[in-house]
Each structure stands twice: as C-alpha cells, then as structure tokens.
Length: 326
Image (cartoon, rainbow, N blue to C red):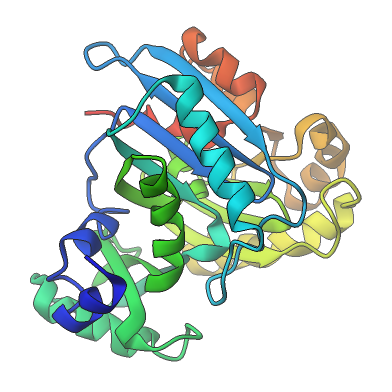
C-alpha cells in the first residue's frame, strides 16, 4: 500500500500502519532484526525454537549518509544506505523474511501522558491523543503514525506511553528493507528496543548515545517514567562529562519532582571505551552508581553468553530484542 493510500484510508485502517502501530503493543517477534543507525547498518537472525544467534552482520556508513530527524528526509545518500542494507542481509543469507526494524531515536517522538480517564477503544483513543499532541510535533495530524500503550500511573488515572512518527519518514526506512527483498514486520526506535536490558527493580536512568543524538529514559518496575531525545552539543568523541550531565539532569530532576524519589542507578550506552570517563562526575552529581548498560546486564546474567559477540560490538538494541521473545 502506498503512503498516500494509507493516509486516505485512515491511520488504523491501513495494514502497514497497523504493523508500525505495534511498536509498543506486544509486538510479534520476527527472527530477523535490522537496525539502521546514523553510523552503520546491522542485522542479526536467530533460530526459531531456541532463539540461538545464527549470525550477524555490520556495514558502516559514511558520516554524511544519513541525518536522522522526525521531519525531513533522513537518507542523504540513499544509494549507499540501500547498498549497506542489501549487504547485511546477503551476509546472513536471508531473503523474503519478516524483519523487526529499529530506526534512529530522533525519528520517533515518545511521550508519557497522564489522563484522568482514557478510552478503551482505539477509535476513541487515537483522536484524543492527536488532539493532546497536535502542538508537540512539527507535522500534520493526517501524516502522523501513532502507537500507544497504557501503563500504571503514579497517581489516580491512566498513564499512556505514546509514540509518534511521520508517515513518509517511516516509509523511507521500510522501503530500504523492501528493496532488499525483506518485509518490515515491526518498526520501533532503537532505544525502546534496548530498554529491556535495564535492571528496573529500582529507578534506573538510561543515557544512550547514537550518532549525534542522546536519548534519556527512566524506567521503574516496568514503567517508563520519563523519556527525552536531544541533539548532543558535541560529537560523541568530544563530549565532556559536564555536557552529558547537563543533558540528562532535566530528566532526572523531573523524575525526582514527579515521583518524590531520586534515581537509584544510571546506565550508559553508546559511549564505547569512553564510558569510564563519565562515571565520576555523574555519580557525584546524581548520587547513584553509574555503569555500562551492556557490562552490567552481562554481569547480572541478563545477556546470554551466546550473545556476547553482539555485546562486543555494542549492539544493545539487537540484544534487547531477545529479552521479551515469545
């Protein structure tokens, strides 16, 4: 179905839009995963019966191949990205299969909204969410994909986690997979895929760097308490501890004000070997332990030893996808 047809039929009457709408609503688990990030394209596949890793592939992208954003064209060098996507699937030896597609965080706007009451039906809930968020996204409602899920509220009422994306931007990414003979079955942002790696038995803040974007999320006992995606003031290789603190502090402060408690731990992702440089200042200012997301998840047994090759390449989203397999 074309994007125009999807808009004409209505956002939830389109089959392809319903697939996108499964970002948050208990998505199925394709055995092939592809993450398209600003600096690389990666893919992996698992066995059907045991979810054992069968293989993975990585293809780098030039620094100016992509410009992830929720508004404008993301693919500055579409041919290069298309070739990288084709190559990772060729290396895995897969074709014609359904794929879970992870897109850069700036593509998907995520909000945690509170309502006194919230409709049970999608037909009633969707217009309400559109009205509530119409001034929060820089594109028209007719071209907006929307997905949501309810979660426990910190007070009376209902909290709703809502993901929004521009239809034609999502289609850019889906068409990359289709050009390689694959079928996009689930679409979601990379950080949402990685979040299951957190130990959320206590309030945990995730600070995840990918390209020029920083995503900060706070999770507590399965509840997404805060989420923010911003542009970094410096390239990741030049980012200072103080600059990172300045970016994540507003989310930590918001959580403390809203939930009347501080965060208990911080997990860092996407900083590679630089992660230890940030630990001292963050622990001092935020008053809690700071560790690498993948290192702590592995130490606590949340990453199977067979997935260590993915961890060695910082593929946290691909590993996170396996945590909720069904």
